[in-house]
Image (tube, rainbow, N blue to C red; front, side):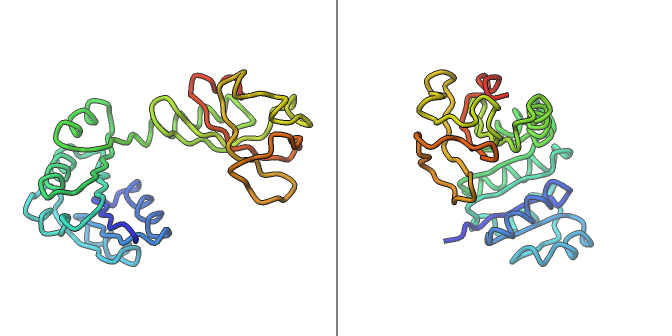
Length: 215
């Protein structure tokens, strides 16, 4: 069953979130104080509402009590973010995710009830820095404060060798969870005895402190 998700705030980040959720088929509600923006984006959601997101009554009228997840995206407006988080939790929303522009703002939003804080600029900067430092990295995914997933090309010295010979888990505490090579479909259980080709793509789970071994 699709999750019911509300995205509050249709700035640039809110739009990206709404577009992705819509493409995944989520039952989506979007809200913003700008009527023109809501009209432009109304096709993304099953419900698109013009609302003052600093007003508790206007937020309650959105019907957030029926949502599985509420995403609060007004990172530049502390007042609106606090109000949306507080009302959502008061209405019993199981999971409230809030964007924060700073660590201090994130701390405040957690105190008023946010279950998860996201720092988009910080996460993009971290990912970009990792790509700059390693030409092998194709994509980087942040899982939590310590753990990440990297989609990468194999290091030159890995080519032609098998996972069993490389023993990456034992040597570097990293885990190759999938290998795509030779036009074969990806597998969640890569064969440890098949040599890694130069054109292979690896999906690796690692602690952030161990990324230096992959770069």
